[in-house]
Length: 450
Image (cartoon, rainbow, N blue to C red):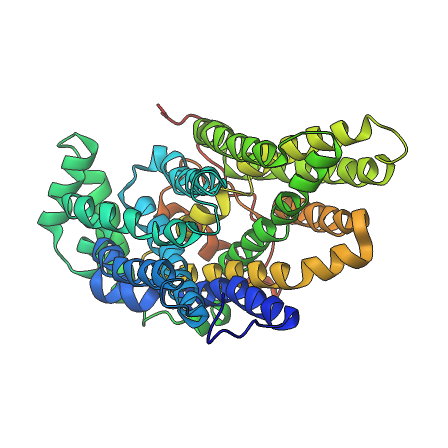
C-alpha cells in the first residue's frame, strides 16, 4: 500500500504483514478470555447476536482499508475480527452443548468444526486470483466477513435461548420446559428438567466460579487441565504447518496449479469433519481423539522422511502428498472437532463459562505462538520441523489414553459427580487430584440416530 507517495521499505512491509497476521490471534486471545462476561450477563444466544456488531465493524474496516489507503484500518480490522472469533469459539460450542440431547451432543458439537472448515474452504476458493484474490479485489474478500454476521443476525432470533441457562441461571422453568419440548419434539422432558433443577440447587450452594477457582478447587482442576491439554493438542498438532508447506510440496511434485491441490486438502478437511460427525456418538470422543493423534503422528513421520528424500527419489513427493491428505483427514476425525465441544461437557453450568474462557484462551495463545515461531523453526530445521510435531502428537496421545475420560452418553451431572468423586478420593488418599479418569465410561448401550 502506498501513502503520501512514499514506498515503504521491505523491512517495514514485512513487519506490517507480520503484525497484520499476528494481531488476529491476539484479538482471539482477548475475546476468548471475555466469554464469561457476556454469557453470564446476556445469555448464550443474545451474546452471539450482540457480537455480530464486531464482525460487521471489522469487515468494514478491512474492506475499506485500500480505499482509505490506511494499513492501520487493516490491522485494526484484523484485531476486531479476532475479538469476534475468540468470543464465538466460546459461545457456539457452549450453546450447542446446552441445547443438544445427551445422545447427540457430540454429533451436534462437531457441527461447530464443520462450520469452521467450510468457511476455510470457501475462503480458499474465493481467494483464487481470478475470483477475489487479485490486487484490486482482495479488500472485497476481507469485507465479505460481514455476510455471515448479517445472516446470523437475521436467523438467530428464530432460535431459542439455552434452556439450561433459562432454568439454572434465570430460574425460568416453564420457558425452559417449553423450549426443550419444542427442540426435542416430545412432551416428556421431566427427567431433563429434573436434572437441570438438581444442578441449579447445587449451583446455588456454591459461590461464583472464577478462573482462579478452576485451579484451586480439586474437582475443577482435573477437567480444566484436560481441557487445556486438548486445546493444545489441536494447535500443536502441526496442522497449520502442513497447510503452510502444502503448496510448495504440491509444486515440487509437478502439480501445475498447486493452489488447487491445496484447495483439495481443504475439501478433505471438510469431508472428514462430516465423517467425524457420524462417528463421534458411536466410537466416542476419547477413542476418536486417540485415533486422530496416532494417525497424525505416523503421517508426520512419513512427511519428514519423504521431504528429506524427495530430491533423491522422484516418487517421494507423491508419498508426501498422500501423507498430507491423510494427516488432514486424521486431524478432522479427532483433534479438529473434539477439543471445541468436550470442554462444555466436562463442566457444570456454574464453572462452564470460566472454563470455556480459559480453554479458548489457551487455544488462541498456542495458535499465536505457533504462527510466531514456526517460520523460524522451519527455516533452521527444514523438514525436521515435523519431528517436533511428532513428539507433541505422541505426548498428547499418551495423555489422552491415561487422563481423558469418555463422556459419550453421560449427562453433565454424571460427569461432574464423577470428577467430584475422583477429587474426594484423591483428597482422602493424599494424592494429587490429577489421576486416572477412565472410570467415567459411557453406558453400554446408547440410542444414537445421527
